[in-house]
Image (cartoon, rainbow, N blue to C red; front, side, top):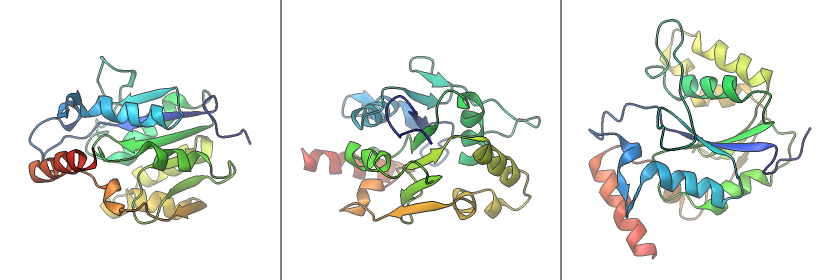
Length: 201
């Protein structure tokens, strides 16, 4: 098993959602002077990963377009479909990937870096009850699990929880404060995150 480092591991910012509750594309919202997608790319790079991709159609950034399955379901099937799309495109280029959502603006680079420090043989590393950020071994086993879960008819079986139930994993304790791993899905949550960032400066 390769060491988890900047050569063997890439970063992925998941940005393929529909932002329905926000009412506009979250990835392009301005977070204190920069688009949120740019902020998240910077967070991952600051953690020590030189190669970071956006999962979604954002040509102004290093990106991987989420290609649909035969039924065109990649967006509606949620993050697992995005992960499968990414894994199919990156398999063979990297041994690991660290995945963060585009809507976690308070995520510290140190929290991402801690994932890289965990033993390389662990297939999945995440924070307890948070699911993202997430480090995965990028191999055929991961792709097989993702395909199998996406074939399930029940929505609850097509979830990150279901994926992590299948994989040997290490749970890390939540950072202090745990709100650093908060997602922003609504305008109210967005305003809260903006205020939090100002109070930490």
